[in-house]
Amino acid sequence: MKKYPAILLVGPPGSGKGTQGKMLGNVPGLFHCSCGDVFRNIEPATELGGLFISYSSQGKLVPDDVTIRLWLDYVQRCQNARLFCPDRDVLLLDGIPRNLAQAQLLESFIEVKLALKLVCASRKVLLERIKRRAVKENRLDDACDEVILNRLMVYQEQSEPMLQYFQDEKTRAIEASKPPLTVNAQIMNILRHELALRAPVLTTPGLMAEN
Image (tube, rainbow, N blue to C red):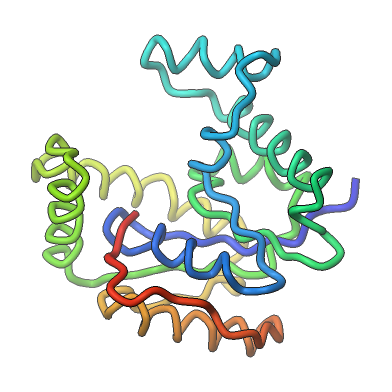
C-alpha cells in the first residue's frame, strides 16, 4: 500500500503536546490523529475491539502490534468516511508511535516528513504544569512527584530511540516552555518553511499546556 505522509508530534509529559495537537488539527492539510482518538473510537463489537478490551479490562498494557492494528483500523475508517484524504492531508501523529517497537511496525504504513520535538530544559516547569493539570482534571495521583518523574524517565528511555530511528535530520526541536500561542507560532513557521503549509491556525486564548 502507498505510505501515508506523516508528521510526528513528540514531547515529554507537561510539554504541551496535547494542546499543540488540538491547535494544529485546525490547519487545513493536517489530520490530527492522537493515541487517545484511536482508543476512544474503538468498536467493541469487532474482533480487534474485543482484543483491546481483553487487555484493558485486566489493567494490562496493550501490546505494540495490537496498538498499531487499532491505529491502522482507525485511520482507514477516517479515510473511508472522507475525514482524512491522503492525497490532500498529512497525518499529524500525536502519542503514536510511543516507542521504537511501534515505530518499526509503523514504518510499513507511514512516510515521516518531519518530527516536531517539544523540548523544555526546565524540569520544574514540566512538574508545575503536570501538577496544575492533575488538580484541574481531578487526577490527583498524577500530582505525585515520584509518579511524574517516572513518566519523564519512561519518555526519555522510549521516545529518544524512536526519534533516532526516524533519522535525526528530520527532527525539529521547539522550545516548549513558552506560552501555547508562542509555541504554536514556532511550529507554524517550521511547517511553512518545510512543507509549505501556509494556512493560519485557529487558536483559543488561555489554552493550558498538557501532554
